[in-house]
Length: 304
Image (cartoon, rainbow, N blue to C red; front, top):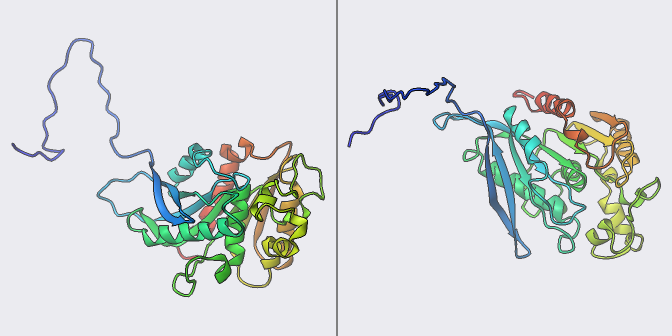
């Protein structure tokens, strides 16, 4: 049987009465979504990625910048498809997006989520060719508890205590960080109005610390505050967005991060969303996403 190339293959001459004909481009348009990619097994739990790869011809060799997206969940088990639709839109702009599953509480004790994000990043860099990734251009992006993991991954850099892999052989250099309404300093979550308990042993932070009242573990409070790792050392630029009526993570948390970054001469952009609550789709409107995309484009372009 003859094997035709597409150009050689004959077009059907059949044309029944009433048939209508379209002539649409055949080139790939929609990104490919690859689910349930196991990047590690920790504490007996398989951890997965959902990877979104921009549309391109199979015969093309492409190398796109990488966005490691960590989905928020109050540190509990995540829904990795929660923001799949807007993240597909991000991929359409020429980014590979890897949505990271981390170890959830109560088994995932601090700093498990930060370590898992770094492990996932190394997995993607080690499989750069397979997923069309440029291994020299990658950033963190997250919302809520995922934003906390993203910020901490960037500010702790290559500190060995925040990495399961040997940082001497696999150092990481994130080139940007996008933080949507993430907590920053757990010791100060109750300073401003909130509808949620952030201190008891059953609170999200209490479970993150192993099921204890957070006031009984001052050493963990200090170690877990992102503010304590921001100093004169080199850090990537940050984009921070937070709703001014956030009933879960106080708006003040992002103010503290922004002010600390500015005080230490680091680059940071901060957008306050009026009349906006925690986890609102306002952060993923075309206008809000354009702000994030412009920030990522600026900091992930070649030559930076």
